[in-house]
Length: 260
Image (cartoon, rainbow, N blue to C red):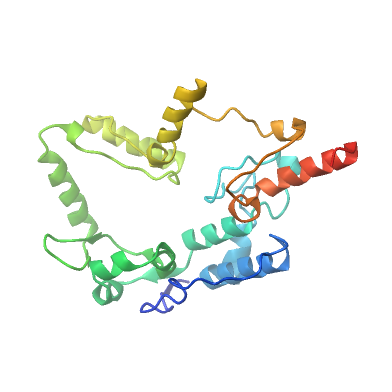
């Protein structure tokens, strides 16, 4: 069952307010579980929440869209092999909320541009193609046949296939990405940037110039052999929650050996 968005479209409470509190003493526990279940139950419902979360990072399920942290061997995986942030990301992806035509009548482009990513994500999933006509201030529905014809006409009008760029999301499945690149190369270009170009290409360039290799040189197994781990600029409890498993194991190993 799907549902049209019902949360407040007009206000974004606390978006511009700074909430100052005493620092937390833990990053997990009951509070994280309550926040996780509140978000997923609201977006997915009880049955869909259970069926979805039990498949996250499982051998017969799917990889969490929240991060690329390595999963343990299938025999070592837990029933709940996900973190709070991952569950929230999945809730937004698999939400039963849907955006209907009235949504785009109520919100013009300037209004949508002023909204936060959180608000836009919570609005729900599109149910049909949308288009912005020249000079228009609102998106409007367009049929699939007309949408494909519009794309085809735009591509046919280019002087050279290399004038087109075909962007893909890092969340695209391997199967969909393979078909997409086949279509693009058949069209006559290799301009296939994805989110890695924006996220990692600057890093790869800088690392290659500084250490001679364009990617990280640390393996997860290195954690357990290190005598010290220095973390600067981020809090793993909130930014890298699945990393806590490796850090916890490292602390346990150091404590057992008398180092910590």
